[in-house]
Image (cartoon, rainbow, N blue to C red; front, side, top):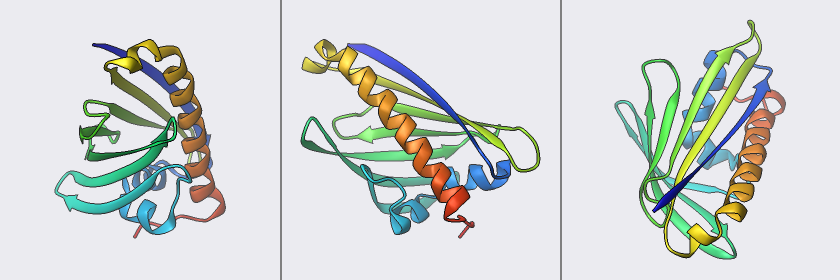
Amino acid sequence: MSNIAVKSEKVIARPIDEVRSQFVDFAHHERAGVHKGFQVSNVRQSGTGCTYTGRRRVFGMLQEDEFEVRVNPDGGSTMRSISGPNVGTTIKQAFQSLGPAKTLVRLEVDMPLKGLFRLLAPLMRVGIQQDLKSALEEDRIDLEERGYTKS
């Protein structure tokens, strides 16, 4: 088995605490439909984060994974697929304050590739990079333009 790692980052014009909150508020993501190509449902809160079901289409096929979200002691967060076709995939989210109303968000995806997907690694890498850029822009819109407020 091989892995691919992809990184992306974006500056969001909101205070770091608000950005951190929105990035792990999956009940809000479910209600607001923050991401067009990724459906969040069945959000269950836990002491250090939550678990949710995520659905998306990859190469035309519907994929459904269960994700576990944990808030890290440093204020970042980690999402991990715990079941489904992408089990073992991790998404690390790191946040850096650039002042009272600006936050740099860094995302890093580490995805194990199995079977045929190993042969498609270059396409998968490009697809994940595009997904990260789109997701960051959708989160930026939710925070800056829609005015996300913590539930």
